[in-house]
Image (cartoon, helix red, strand yellow):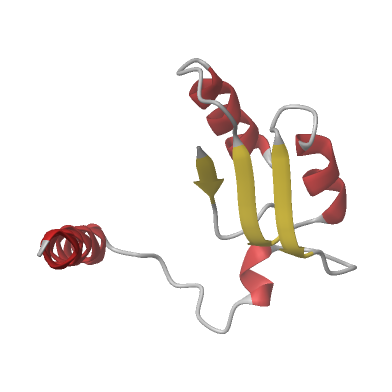
Length: 98
């Protein structure tokens, strides 16, 4: 299972997510983030099978500083993205079986 977040500051939410997912007994748990504090990325390695932090700037300060647009995603945007993904997945599955 791959757990993705917009970034890691303290890592407390991701740590809780990893521990919760472990209860489902996945084969592997991978944490993947585009940006994170290097120390936080290092501290998650004992609880996840793999931690991928693409960018670990120094000094880190906050996740939002590393984005041009860090506005919140609305529930409606999430619904639209999930609907589009479901539709695209069905189309791709139909193409593969044709």
